[in-house]
Length: 246
Ligand code: NAP
Image 1 (cartoon, rainbow, N blue to C red):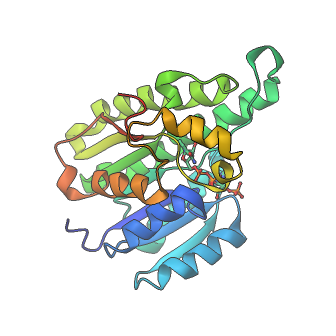
Image 2 (image 1 turned 90 degrees about the vertical axis):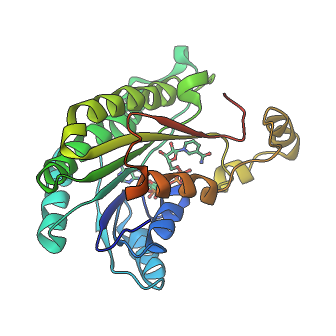
């Protein structure tokens, strides 16, 4: 995988899966922009990832705000002169059964998880099209394919990402840009760690590989799709879920 001189933007890169993706890309020598709603956490992560020997910067960005997105991509383009990789990873949950779900919770999840992918991809693809090269990797979820009680907003946002990604893939293939989805299953994070042991055991029984995924399991798939080696793969969904959905 030759990533020589490449620049990547990772949204929600300050912690969790986004941070692991940033680390995975940094190990390949890629210049990194860690864009997150929390500047403090992004700055900390940027300093940590920078220890791997790459240039990194932290940017405060709310991915659901079009003016902030436009400014961020303009600034990155001015600073580094190119953007090769966009990882749309920022995401939130606001769970509730459909009958009880507040409209605000629906809107927040759709805006931060789905509209953000449209806004960030639009800005990145502008730059990538001029370069005639780009990799867009969008983080969805297994629930986009299975549904999940209590997650109407979240599963709709993640299913929307799949259609959006396939469309970007078709519209910009001729410009050397690929767009793919990584759909994680249950990944060990602070959130899943906090679940009671019996709940975790029951969830694991639904996973043929018998364990939760790690953030590195997700990052490994993302790094491959972000690399020049994945050049004949576009509009695809890579499921990283231990076999719980196939
Ligand atoms: P996480 O630990 O909560 O990290 C998400 C990051 O995104 C945080 O740094 C968060 O900042 C940031 N963020 C939230 N809202 C934002 C906004 N409006 N603009 C910019 N950044 C924002 O989540 P994760 O578990 O790593 O998940 C990462 C992605 O994987 C998400 O898209 C998620 O839906 C998906 N996913 C996760 C799992 C799982 O099991 N963990 C499974 C399937 C899919 P704050 O911390 O300051 O809010």
